Image 1 (cartoon, rainbow, N blue to C red):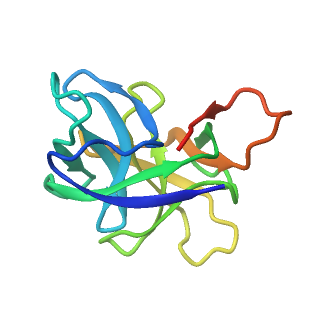
Image 2 (image 1 turned 90 degrees about the vertical axis):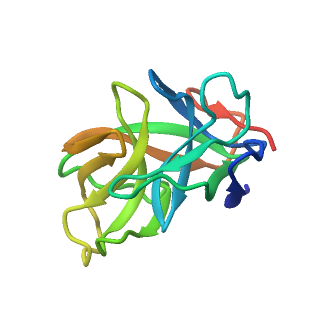
Length: 163
């Protein structure tokens, strides 16, 4: 299985295997991306096809450069709420500018990706605390957490992404 963050810039195409998180009213289709180790979204802008427009993460201005997450594994968005354990298959992004460990999540309602932080950064069994998205200054205590698994013919309910 291959999962990696690929550096991209404004005007380049979304890479093959990018994970579409959903569609927002303002951005259209959005993909899982990050900059400064903080997960968020990359948009193409309405009418731009698959050419990257901007990267957006909570607490930062937009950026013309960032990393897009690609995989050939099985993608599943798992519902989580405050206090739920973060599974080992969740996509960890790094330490954000606030010093928090963050994972890739998305809004259940809008499909907009963002960062999920945990209750205790020192915990060996982290628990979901909040989802933070660029388009909303308020946090959410429930979300969907991105998990990626090895492909198996027995698996159902997953999205296959081919590289």
